[in-house]
Length: 388
Ligand SMILES: Cc1ncc(COP(=O)(O)O)c(C=O)c1O
Image (cartoon, rainbow, N blue to C red):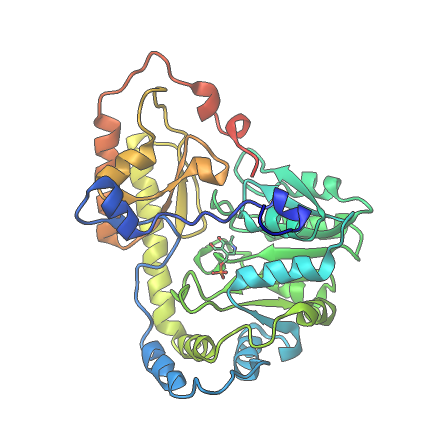
């Protein structure tokens, strides 16, 4: 190697993003594509966001407010907490990474669900800590009982993901409370709620109530999903002062740009229209799930803006389902890259995009295939899951 690098890099794979629309068009020679691979919103910015961004642009010769005071106060107001319980990140992903930096040392460990968001393993490896991956339960949910059992004296951090990416399965708040009660009070717990806005379960606000009072609990949320602002990069965490103080010590100065702060504030002034969009996407999620069920296509019931579809009953020689969909101009995520081989993860788009997906899936299912050598082990789900 041309330069000397940390030994920790041996355990850190590069992040592989989903295929861009341009790449898919070029690689598969299709003329138009529907991108349902990155759990993005099909809607453009909410009214007022572009104008706020343009206004903020006029001042970009100045540094942003490094404390993000106005945005923190607005978020605090909205969630019934004090601004000192809010921390801002360059996307919620940065907060999760900062949690790793702030809490972990070599020889300590982080307990997290698997398969889940790839960043959790990364933050352990980046800190030289041990990554304790705990398999999901049979319903694709974080298995809180096994996770609690995996906590030992080395554990500094437990990460939960609800709804879980890539399964979309939700962890009931009572289960999270049970985990908190089962582990030592000084072990930090972070609940990643990136897809919270799409949850329709009745207990959906309870983790927030717990984060108001439990000193070891932090939750993270983002403007990247329901708010449709992944390009500007802003997310936040809500937790105890101890949690916030730990993260603030490792937070890079000016990590959230003035443009991002302005966009998030403008979006928060449009909660009514946001709610309408979320309702549309939730209705579409239910429609797509009903359509899959009617076709006999297996899927994991989702509380997010994506659905894990499969396992598919394909022959060994058949092209993977995500490739067959790509040839028809529908970009979805290959489950093999997410630890769920034999599946695809499809983002819920607008009604037209979802119809395009369902039509393309029908064509894939109708295409002739070899039945004689179906590799059921690889398709069976859990056994076939690959470590990341
Ligand atoms: C479960 C989960 N958490 C966090 C993130 C990070 O989102 P962002 O950094 O854009 O807020 C994602 C993004 O896909 C995610 O799926």
